[in-house]
Length: 246
Length: 219
Image (cartoon, rainbow over all chains, first blue to last red):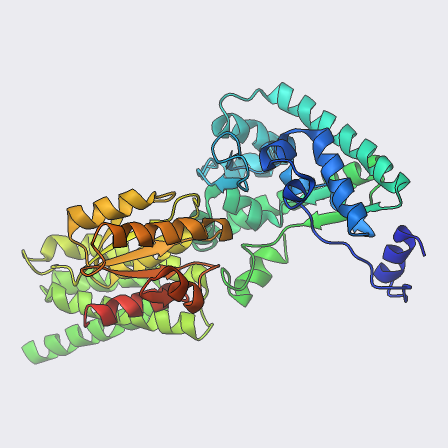
């Protein structure tokens, strides 16, 4: 079986010839390939080469393109200020999110009315005053093209790219970044209706973006991040009410 | 009539801890307003709030509550304190002990640390919050300046373990370890790591950290 057949067989609950290997890879490729985390996060070509070397050496069937360590995508997609290796942190550190609470109470209405892109144009200048929205959109477009190209090159080597789009999570995860975990957890008590209605809009928009992007890069799988939606943070009742619904 | 009024006051007081542990924010404030209007002893109110907070901690331990509920209870407690504080006399809110808290260098995660701080403050401890990304020297300076007896060091990243080790070592090198105890907490921490870095206590979660502080200060 080829890698993509092995993955497809497993996903459709058929029996593959062996267990497929498909680890979630982000920064680990950097030390393995002998580059710094700072380089991995900022240099698209060196990132791809590190990912390819790691996947080939370990004979993986599928690999992430270190999408979660791509500065352009992180800055545009995650509504918290990122502390970066080589700039805010030592060269080989892992990036960290500083939840500065950029999203205000009234921004729930902007999300509900103008959608995720509308909210993004409000939040990005607050989080990164040095960034320009038009330039950011062009950078994201360029990053999208690079991923499409890298997916083709990966497949040519017999390795399947893992996902065509990374969703930061259900709306609650997004609010945790945008508002801060603390505030988002309190919002569940203080603004439940807003969280649900704005969350519904977030869900519709992000799914639309995921479908569009995955169609363009021909990797029809998406990654949905979940960390703050775990039972450590939320009770079962709140999980059903605020996570499953949005 | 006085007896009847006293009985009613007791009823209100009895309901305070219950309302607090059920996280009924508005009801907690209503009961406090009522008690203060009737000139109830503010220390009795604090005592009931503290009982309510203990119950919240127990519900968290029993997995009935999650971190969201712990954070919300801290918020209610702060609101309650705003109401009670003006009625306290000098010395009524004397802290049970002084604790320094900080997330070690190289790590900017503050959620766990902040929950511990909330629980400590709600239970009557004075907390000196050094914030996040705290260099070892800052822990040393804080111990010297404040005379705190307990230091809490928090971390989420495995990469920050060396900073934890360094912070403990710096307190040793500064000759302060005989007068200060260190508790550690956060995702990558464990009893084993505690032994390894030479700390004194390991708290698996915020409720355990509070229990450690209470035991340490004999409360």
